[in-house]
Length: 196
Length: 104
Ligand SMILES: [Zn+2]
Image (cartoon, rainbow over all chains, first blue to last red; front, side, top):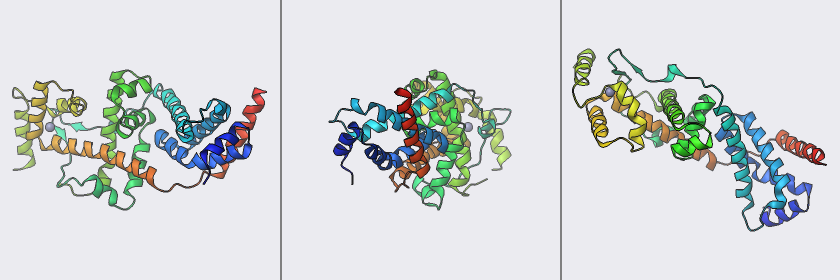
């Protein structure tokens, strides 16, 4: 196991092997985080690359008493957020076909559940975890980013609006539509125990 | 009771005072979950949920999918991760060298 302290010393002194060690040491966690944030493996790789360039450039400014992983991680998250902000500004697919439906009197048309399985029950089905993650990733980026930051990372709606440079009302619309779409996509994963 | 008979009752019921339609209910979900609905609206919202199985089931599945998404993502992060792909390591090292040259 590499000692982070000596790794930082070697990095500051310009040791190229230390830089490669740092890539191999934190790369897996950073890559997963970027994939989770961005939902796209290629963009995730771009962000990890950009993160490491920043790390190499700024290692001299790193305070030795701080935790090197936290520092690198924050650089990565900022790099992903920059990407999210850029795509938040792009026009968004509306996903009307995944939104709830109502009849002409405003009555909901909705399949009923005999018993809705618990999260535990859902995720213990084979392959369910991967299906759920694929469902999140399948949402249009402008929507899934809001859902990711709000519901998975747990920021409040106002914070998400600020992180993505969106208005509060636009953030709310996207959040609700993203959640409704996710629910629709996940219904088959939840299982077949429905009344109708 | 048949489904169509139930629908007739719903149609009539949701037009009563202190009631809301399913479509209106949909529009208040976000505020309801954030605890931001004014008291009177919340009472009407809760009342709708009591009488409307469709909205009750919808909201339950809506909440369950949020929770499931969160738990699945957290579990993924706790699992053993594969190594960084070699092509990414190579790409980062090359990009870093190019960046250094650019700065000289
Ligand atoms: Zn309803």
